Image (cartoon, rainbow, N blue to C red; front, side):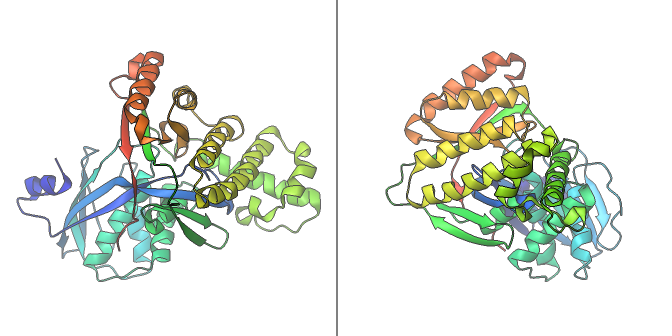
Length: 390
């Protein structure tokens, strides 16, 4: 059942509007955006759909086909604290938007996600979809930068996830058959077109069967460990430093890290080791894509996955096994965990000529290793896509 069909069944009328926001994948450039690093990424042709109609009384009434509970609040009196359900991201978005614009019109809506939850920036996609609808009904025209900042603020301040701008930027800026190459220090970006001689590729999404909660995971701890490493490195090197929350590894030159990393606690130097390594991989990845070298770009993605396991120290046994299987499968250029990396899914860049054997081999090997997840495991093929249309 689609979002529009569910809306008609629920409200006995057709929705006035429908909209779509893509999910994103980030083959190289993971876990660096919150420290103002560089990223590469794509939007994909799967994502979040919404069907909606206005409510002039200012009430927001929204249902997700992925969750049982329908949520409701008023645009002018959104609960100030999280309610502990799936709609908290949207309550946070309402507050962030209301603080900038006068909201009067609410809506009734149904949301639907095309792929299982976990690892594809579904929370950011849901927020952007929600904001696009709320803005349309209230006559608000957000810039791309505003949409990204408001979406990020909803996750940071209301939900309590210390994420950066990677997810939102991919979902807004990306263009089909182009690589988004972005510097989070100044938000500058480039859309690098697919080289005419590049080998064909698709994205394969392998779901482990395990869902994960970003806010309830160790994600925020990793961010704090990066900031702690940056703060300590500045002190060791005699650099100026200010507030902890305004400190980033991007402020610290690589040579300072190499000089003083042995003085850092294990967890701090490992997080920094991943960050500096990933920074280099992103720059190399952008150049590999520019010259049409899919093998080199894919290899960097595998290296990113290795670093996430050994230095960022994420990955459940299930995801680590999925990653290992991918590295040994013919026709896979590269891949890594997608998203926070505690549960969720793995992303692979694949040669379409091998797609049948890849899907069969990865599925058989994974389900043999974790037979209790056989009914929940799934695999999906996707292609690059344009970002959200405002």
